[in-house]
Amino acid sequence: MFKGEVMKLGLLFTGFGEQFVTMGKDVYDVTRSTQELFDQASIVTQVNYIKLIFADSDAELAKIENGYGALYLVQAALYEILKEKGICPEFIAGYGIGEYTAMHAAGGLTFVDGLYLLQKYATLIQQAQEELSQYSILHIPRSISAEELENLFPQLKVKENSLFISAFNMPEDHFISGTHKSIDVLEDMCDKMEIKKMKRFGFEMELRTPWMQVVVDQFKIYFHKVTFHDLQVPVITNVDGAYITTAHAVEGAMLRRPVEPIHWYETMQGFAGCDTLLIIGPGERLVKWAQSLYPDKKIMQILTLQDIAQVVALLPENSEQCGPVVQEGATLHDLDEQNEIEDEDDDFVDEASDEDVEVE
Image 1 (cartoon, rainbow, N blue to C red):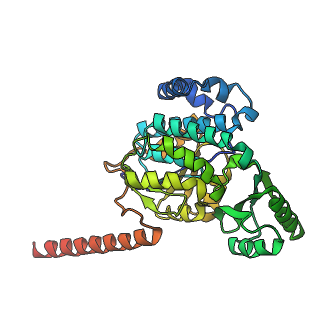
Image 2: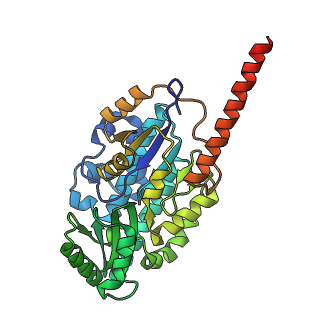
Image 3: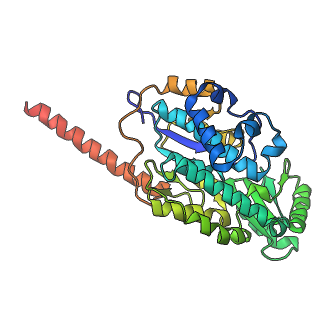
């Protein structure tokens, strides 16, 4: 929140799949804090992130053992600069893997712990490749609602529980996870329904279904070695679109995320009270969704020095308090009620002030 115009900022971190070679290069070249993060990440993971992100190939970055950490590193570096400039959000969220950066930015876990968990998570997914490789993901970006999809699944004559909606992005934009055969059948049906611009992905995009339990069971061993902290800024979770603030809630949400779908539309609704949304990281997907849901808000993507300069120029002065006070597990409806109470309190103060003036 900022003095003067009292603008309310929301921060959103992009997910895996839209990373590319040279992302964040101009920031790295001139920013000491970014260079230090790269050095720290390379020491911790024994990965040469300078070479990987700036000089390797998009194919290498597409491998989860490389891409997960690379995306997290670049996003964390960008946020660090924004924080140094005094930019303070009301709420934070991250799409998919971007939720790790969101939790770090909000103070829920250290940079190193977030990188450690992502590296272990990617390794465990790779180790489960033989089992997970029987599944794929279909992106259906238009023309059919979640309810229509769920009604369609039983008509496809595929094995029961072989198709799941793994991401509720927008009212007619979804990711569907399923066995290869089931996805084939679904894709054919969508073709007949003249649904366009579908795209198919491997399990690397995160299945977000009960099939990931095989990974979660092993992940818990490493997960519980990390210390989580209460949040300095509320995070709106992917799993249910609720606001969380405590270390316990952070741990629970992060452990649930691999086996539960992304509810991004609900997550985005939590930013209704913000004036400006900053999309941190590469890719256009989150920008388009935000513009669709909030055509009257200012939507800015942060990936370059110029992007950062534009934000700083727009919001030059921040307030002393960072983030609102919200109740753990609150939803948008709960927050609306809280705001109504605060507005009533403000009216009462105004009336009292008027009375004082009249007495004088």
